[in-house]
Image (cartoon, rainbow, N blue to C red; front, side, top):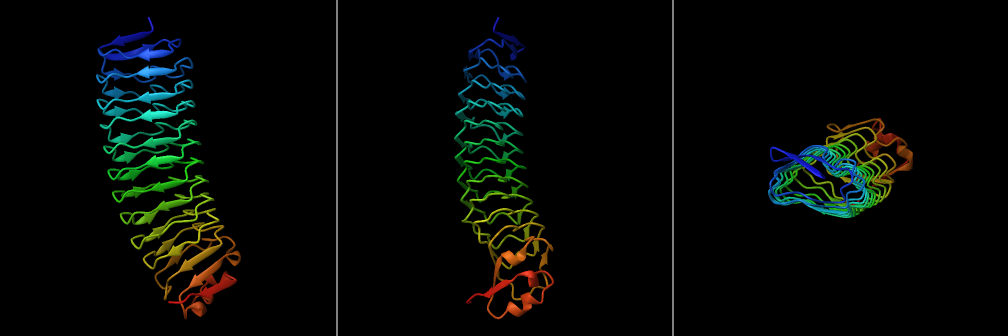
Length: 298
């Protein structure tokens, strides 16, 4: 027996199975059923399946491609974690959430198309997908979880949808090939470490709806020259550390709360400020540490 079923669920599969064909008689692939199966190369999932359990295919290092039919409404946590040979995954158009660590450490995955049905991309969903180059995030997505794309070192560009309400801390941290990203006007805050160590990032506009830039938000983004709108009222520790150029647009600093180590060595950064305000900045307890303060033309 290669597959054991019980009450319309697959509850066990042989570790020797190479090409699995899920029978139409079942609707659930139970948790851990194929987990750690190094022999598994392919799986055919019928449209009778509605649920794929936690860790169902975790650690199936020989699995190269998988198609999940639209009948599936729920995919469990870590379901494809560590499937290091997985090159292609077609997701169901009926799921609302990509769960925690669903495809983390899928090192061969190069692109993924998030279905229009998805509202939330969970924490660490694609963590360490080091060859992921392209991801399409639809207008349905409202939340991108903590470290969702952490260390996706081949990702070069991302367009965030206008539907996005929450971009959680560390979401794109360590995406060292990321060069450009659009921040939607639906966000009010750039949270802690969101773009930390995105060392290739050189194109990004901070929209005027942003009021808070969190700790280490752009830490290590050495090629970025941020232009901060006057709507930003709070800038956290390390937010722009290692950045070479920073433009501020404040004609008064009374309402700005900026951490004392927003940039650890401010004398290495050129600060651009509005015409006629250089002296005001030079008298500020933090900004006076900048060696180069340059007034811009209004």
